[in-house]
Figure 1 (cartoon, helix red, strand yellow):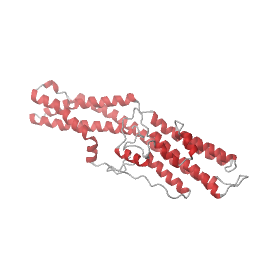
Figure 2 (figure 1 turned 90 degrees about the horizontal axis):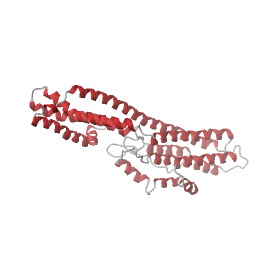
Figure 3 (figure 1 turned 180 degrees about the vertical axis):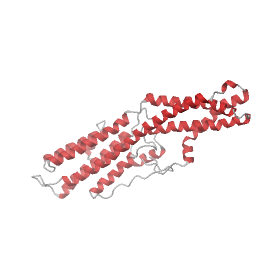
Figure 4 (figure 1 turned 90 degrees about the vertical axis):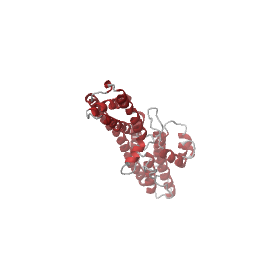
Length: 340
């Protein structure tokens, strides 16, 4: 996520400069051909091209709206995870007690149990973020340089899941490493632990049910994330929009010839080159913005900042247990102030 008010024009131009230069070269070819050969059939009336442009604009609007909906839904899901994480921590802190048990524990033992549950939840947050950032075949967005830099700092060893060792017991870590969906099995461990506490009387039945409802909600939010991750924007739509934009971009310089011919000044025909390139660049940029927003968990600069959200939740819920020596917030990095 870009954490600044707006990108400067130069930053936007830098991001798309390759395409703009390409359009300048490609648009110059038909215009130069017309100028030096006088082949009138190269000129195409602007009216049919403008109709195609209007149709493509509607399609791009639909695609960008659908892409933004996927991005915004992903952000709402993580907002729900924030709320449920806080609720689970408060319940863990306040509900686990000696009130209903026959064998009382010391306060230090109770604090240790609460920390185990909260730390295990932090492990779930990290595991979910790592799983969501695993690349899919249809995700052609390569992780940005800023993201790779952040990952190298957070996960020093080959496997990013190694970082979960800090929050799980050795037996729990060994258990989840044998599983495919590690985040799902961490929640399973939470459920088993809560059941054990209920059987020992450290959690009464009513509060046990309330805590299990939160585990169920976390499963629900994880499932929503996985639905977005594992079901792409329909390829038939994405492919059609892509080719429609290319067709329009190819036709633009031929229509510009017709427009500038009406000026009756031969030298002005060269102005068709930059104008064609600008029109092509605008449509292509709209296409790329939609494409870069449709997959919100790829590690691109347009991502939902799930690593930052997971870290913020960790700090928040561990502070609820009065823990110290907490990790720092993840800050925006790079010239573009990108937050992951």
